Length: 312
Image (cartoon, rainbow, N blue to C red; front, side, top):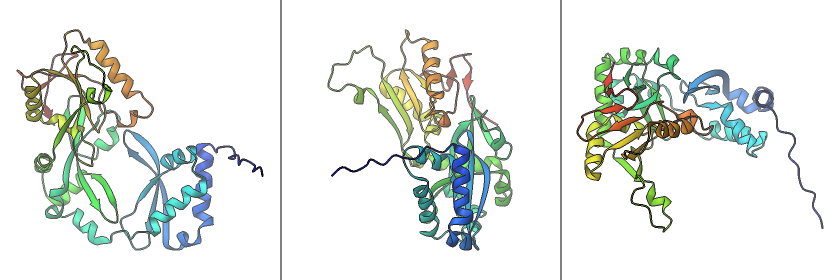
């Protein structure tokens, strides 16, 4: 017996998808309309502006945010519109959002100081965020402080510290950055040799430069490991070589074994290729390539030879 193959209807455009999704939560889900309020607003996240949907439970001050871009990506990859909506409903009705007690913890320095971490972001793409949040420059990157969350109801995530929070804590910018960077010392830094995965049992040319993925071994973006000069030099000394450093994303950097025949053009071409890759560009943090020399204290920008240090 033959069965007729189901053909998916024509894929909606992004604006039509948003309109259809909006119609569902406004008119199609009575339980949600009764117990939750929906607010849509643009949210700046990961180097771009996203269309956010804030779903707030009645009487709660903390609310999850969903992004039309993420939902639409799932839809284009085969998830039906109904399934996208079902996932949102399942999330907001299947867990209880924290009450104002959590909010009170956010404004208490004693409750929050141990959760502070640092994160490197792209300075140019996050200019709006940086008008409200204290930061330090590191090369062409900006270092911000975040509150790392690992909550049963909220899940894992992070809140970028802004000027208002610092004022509520009655702390200084220096205090906040110092505590966050001190907290980072508890996390292990890893360097994964890519040639260990690329060899496939074959003999590797000894002249092939080793390439390491360098980051914090932690559940949050780990490229901020490159501000730890002590650990970078410790690693370079253990390998008895200098390295080129490419900050390829907010998650990690690449350390490429120094070879005299590796040109600047090759290194910048490699970084540019990663930064412009559609699937990776949202995480890009830098347009510059740096050099780690064992006999010099700080990273060096290979374009102009200047040392890279943290400054306000």
